[in-house]
Amino acid sequence: MTQFLGRRAVLAALAMPFVTQRAEARAPFRLRRDPQPLLSPPILEESGTERRLEDFAGRVILLNIWATWCPPCREEMPMLDRLQARIGGADFLVLALCIDDAGIGKGRRFYNEIGIANLSLYWAESLRVQLALSFVGLPTTLLIDRKTREIGRLQGPFDWDSDDTAAQISGLF
Image 1 (tube, rainbow, N blue to C red):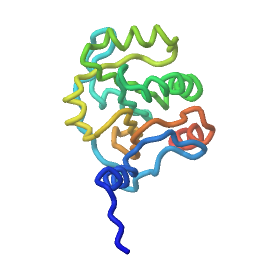
Image 2 (image 1 turned 180 degrees about the vertical axis):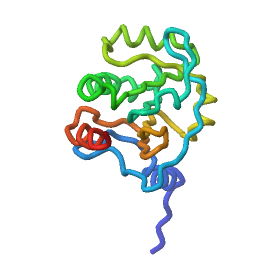
Image 3 (image 1 turned 135 degrees about the vertical axis):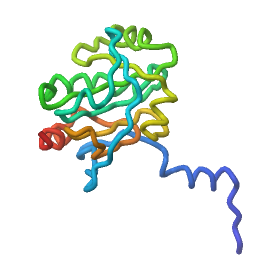
């Protein structure tokens, strides 16, 4: 007996690998054996200074691309703040890059609203970020080595509070 699947069922099955859900109890990144050079969009500091990724060379960077309108981004931002407090410093930086079209002020209001205390605020134009870093969907997080090369990428939200996460990142510096 032949059974036909509906179009929605087929589309849902095809989409399942792309549905992002929070991953827990594992190290976040499968590290690349071949670090990849990155293009850098202009990154604006809250003070108005324009930066590039190369300006952060010399430390491991967790580049988290987010927007205030993205529910999973909003959910993981306090965890990224705690990760920066836990292991951030001269060897490691969580670079939270807001790509809201409304600008850096929208990101600041969000930081103030939820009490972000340890993350500096950075902003860049969404299209420039998408073109430079070749990603689809938010949040997207890149792990970048001391020479500003990509060594890992994670699509979707993650539990940044885990000990496995801190251990994997700390092992790089």
